[in-house]
Length: 188
Image (tube, rainbow, N blue to C red; front, side, top):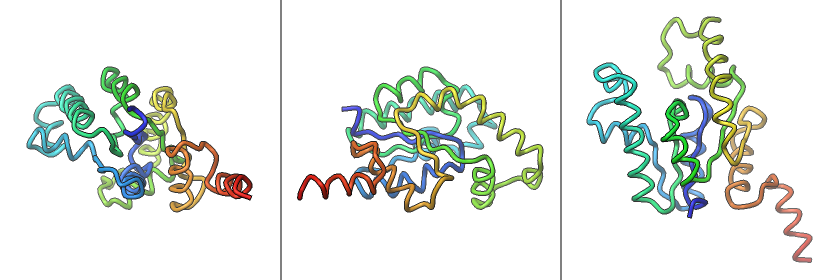
């Protein structure tokens, strides 16, 4: 069913790859990094697809990669690219066929994490880049907020964020601590 396929959505630097890998390992599900699958399908890097064929071609590959992942994996953790929400057909497919989790973060954290990945342009540390980031976040929030779950990855350390994520997708919307306390009460 839908619930056995968990898709993480959100801007770049939200923690989709890191948390996705942790979650996949915990659930013993395959981990699908959609951007890698797109590159495999196309035989080009994301930058090359965009450079050679443009945004529309990239979106087509993205839809095909998602359709393939859904067809192949009844259970999986899928990390999506931040821009997936800009294609409505693909995003709706994701919402219908996966349990979606929006990983949110403060703009400062997005910026810090993306810079830590080492592929920021020299310009990007500027105030202008921060403004761009905030406007992208604002324009996508309406879409991201359609996810069934939302977790703020800036609110606590990684391990705690993971525990909250795990509790959410395993069916309890309560934070891990509460779930444990409740379970202890019930078994007394």
